[in-house]
Image (cartoon, rainbow, N blue to C red; front, side):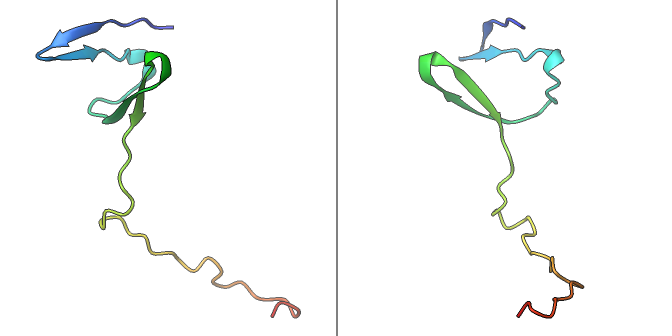
Length: 71
C-alpha cells in the first residue's frame, strides 16, 4: 500500500500518484468526493455521442443463412 500526502500548488492541493500504479502522464480524471471523505478518481472517457466517433453498426448477420423454419 502506498501513502501520499497533499501539497499546496498555487491555490490548490495536489496528490502525487505513485509510479507503481502505471498511470500515463496527461491522463484526465473526473474527481468526486464520496462518503467518509473518500476521494474518487475515475479516468475520463471520451463522449461516444460527440459527433466525431463513428457509431454506424455493421451488418452483424451478413452472410448468415436462415434455417428452413426461421421465418
